[in-house]
Length: 132
Image 1 (cartoon, helix red, strand yellow):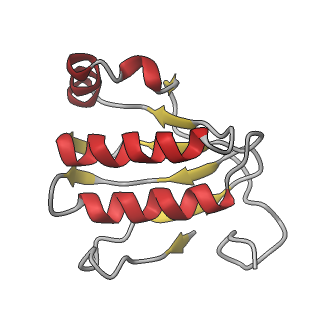
Image 2: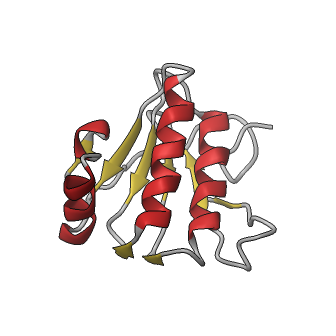
């Protein structure tokens, strides 16, 4: 697993993990105005390793709260992903996140998986799974 902290994230790094079938990011805790820059940075990093055949999957199973800052980061990543034909998926979102997406009309924009991404890391590249 690779952690790449953002200069503005103040140590709230979110791991970017390149798997065979997806690029996973696994935020945890509350994603709000203070921690959203780390989410935005992780999404940008993940998109650099994603492709139409390897979507970005945000594992939301350990996220306890998301506000509009988190939603803006997700929507910006979705927009950037669309330019390359890549998809941003949400895995195991809690009821609060689902409600936020529903209230804002953003729920149909993200495919939702019930379970977090599992799988083997890509064998080539560095030990952290990111390509060289």
